[in-house]
Image (tube, helix red, strand yellow):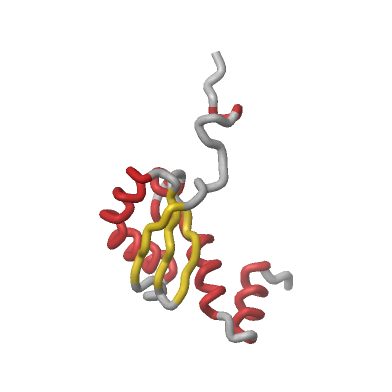
Length: 111
């Protein structure tokens, strides 16, 4: 039987006493589906430490919006993970999420 990389990583991290790292991996994996494409395209999980999820967004206006959405983000992530992993959400400045942006050739309409 072939195991998924995720299963192997989770077991290895647990054996090493790094469950929090495993939780951070799980948050990143569930991010887009949990928060939706609008938020996921403008922010990304940047870390998880002692129950505090750091969410990075490059734009000040979106950071303010995310502050207001923080309780919903916490609830959606915990629901996706099936456990109360995230206790708090803190919004920070940071680079944009990976993927095509407004200046990328693939995201432009062709006429």
